[in-house]
Length: 379
Image (cartoon, rainbow, N blue to C red; front, top):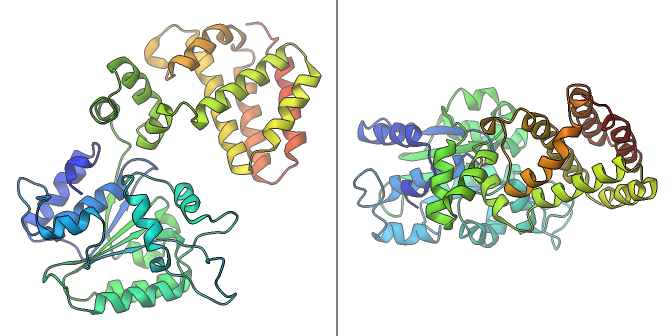
């Protein structure tokens, strides 16, 4: 993988290249940043650069034997560590490791370096299991890195979602970082670095990555996805610097489009005081899992905000798809200074209650009832 496949993040790329040019590559680095910013993509591109036999012009060559192996993520000196679940066929006391799921991992990487923990859980068919890194994982990594480099260069360890390590796993990794094998580079990738041991954080050089610039997202949509300029501009604005959001907005069956339908249905039933319709809507969304319900409520809150801002008729203040704007044109007059705060607080409280395992049916029917009253307040 090459640096030019990473969307945006030019400052971070140049910083990494300077470290190599100056011979100051740290033995442990921590890549952090919000979801979809490309921290894993950057770590993978940097690993490829370190392992490439003939890097030039600020990037890996893409042609040497090492790069050929890296295209399949099967380089013998590149080691991936990631959270896993216990295979269904395993015994109760088994301790799964990354190598148990390396085939599924490489299949997911073949689809690109931008992905979420939820996608990885789906790839493993995790169902209700939590993915973690066991202490056996640290032992396996210690053994792998104790061996000599097969290609005579760097050995690179990429640890994705490092915050998923158990405490005893983290303590073993700490010892490995404190006394690293020769020419070994650790690249830790984390969305929640505060969950890592302070001693690990203090021994890594941290790269805090920002959300991707909107113009970079827009350019990538045009160049990589063949989207027309106007659609790319809209999608880039609502992506909030998250490439995964941008890609999701392209999917006709994406979650956001489904949430828009849910929002339209709920507000219509509530405004019409259609109690049976409100009850049916409640029954439908109650079938969602709690995390999806919380994402839906977060989306509802965004639509409340966009509807209120639309009333000011300043395009730079709104971030919507064409479908969302078509609805908001008609809905915005019902969101005003007399109800916007309460509507927003209503969605936030419902999201909090769902997170606390409140009865979903009661929460969502209450939301629809309160919306019935709030939408009839005239500004």
